Length: 114
Length: 115
Image (cartoon, rainbow over all chains, first blue to last red):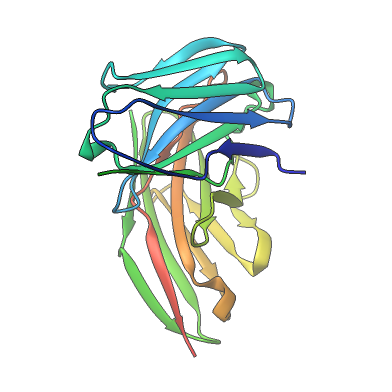
């Protein structure tokens, strides 16, 4: 059983299009995250939700809109895609009361904007 | 504020040799510290973590790391490298403050193991 699963794994699209990535975790965690990993492997947090409430919102363009329908799901919608959005997007989850900061990652969604 | 510096974006070792990946941290509060490994086309997985208990932490696959507060370091070591250790390694820091965790990652070190 996959603990944190993301779909799709690969996305190739044209500039200006809109796309979504979905994430689900079956670990019973209360917090979920989106991270962006660029071509140099640098990982940067984008958003975090705790029990469906947005708690971390880093400096990310408004074209990126996360949504958490319940604590097991976190989606990321990107409008008007740009070349610079090409990256691997990782979903992760954690449990707040475990209080260790350990993150559980999905396998990533590689977005290529042409 | 917190940050992590990983010295060396690429490290090459021979199979069977010692692996040493360096990490220095900066944190305004006592930190939790982590090492994650990323194999090609996969997500990150936890190797080991320091959470203010023992300063020498043992992880999976024979890796260990030592927390040195005086040096603000958390270097990762393995006595004998295997080919399967070739991967990207990330050091990360999180504030020991409870509540929501904002984890900051280093820029990663790519480990190459030469046969």
